[in-house]
Length: 165
Ligand SMILES: CC(=O)SCCNC(=O)CCNC(=O)[C@H](O)C(C)(C)COP(=O)(O)OP(=O)(O)OC[C@H]1O[C@@H](n2cnc3c(N)ncnc32)[C@H](O)[C@@H]1OP(=O)(O)O
Image (cartoon, rainbow, N blue to C red; front, side, top):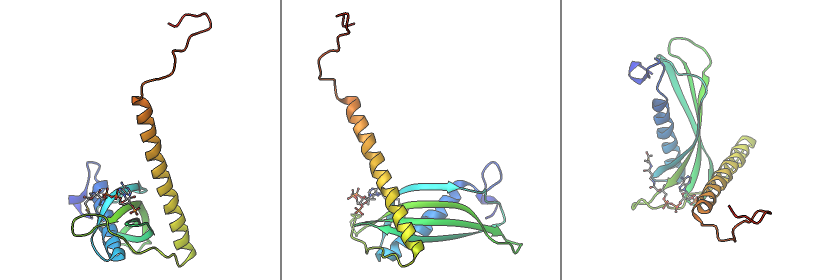
């Protein structure tokens, strides 16, 4: 990372890290699905440690889960100093939803994810948990909006003294 990548605090801008994350996740999604894939959502992104000018950034990524046309891509960002031999530090993690698309930009089917190791199985299970939570949150918000616009149809509530207001 160099001085072009910094924010007003002098550390590397979160958006620079996010762009790297999105780009690498896009490559992984395209390779898994054998064709183009677009970012549908950034499900979760955690910035754990500031990245500094002079850090060498490494991005690891894998497909955690796949549905019919969507995939969850997990990304881990590590950094070490360009001029020191020190172990890389984990600086950010992210989970992104990608959707494989055809020539018209419409969703197309993707191959399943077949976990091979206990670590793969853990990632697969946790991706399903994130998906269930995302769908449940969406349903709850839609229900809440529907309730907010539905006029009350029941009889007016009359207090015990017989006066309604
Ligand atoms: C690499 C890049 O930089 S791409 C640039 C940034 N990204 C874009 O421009 C993408 C713009 N968005 C789109 O083109 C469309 O919304 C698409 C292709 C993502 C989805 O198209 P839709 O017609 O809405 O898809 P549809 O509702 O049929 O859902 C298709 C799949 O996407 C999933 N999906 C759609 N939206 C989301 C979302 N916000 N989060 C997670 N998954 C999603 C669905 O769950 C479904 O998954 P499944 O097939 O595995 O069951």
